[in-house]
Image (tube, rainbow, N blue to C red; front, side):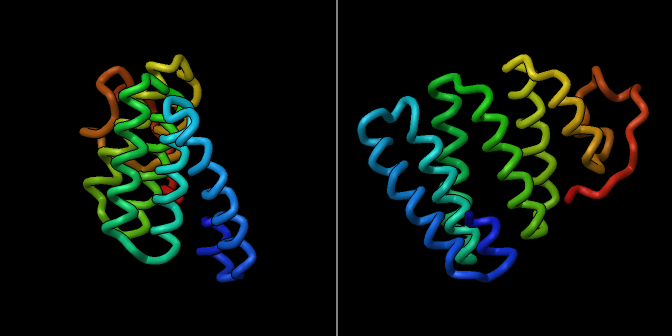
Length: 145
């Protein structure tokens, strides 16, 4: 919802996102192991939508740290991928590349090799970011978003 709020500037999307955020806040209190990372990820998207870069970064960091703490590799990969989109949108190329690499690595840990490969193929990434096991493959040149 927060993505659509940024894209369309329609208030209905913020409200839908706020409703989801409230639900995840409640769930994260009942089961932090299962829901806290999702809550932080939604908070990051909310802050991004509001243009609050510092709080968005803090929330992305909290989401990623929580996924690592609980070994949620799939959500770690998603959180890092979303963070990469965020950093790309604010023009921070170094952090974009770092998050792409972390997302790729988490997808590999999770066993989603095809998704990890697709992530790299969809991104225009300098060779130093691509894992050494993939550097010899032909990579199409496509824009990040």
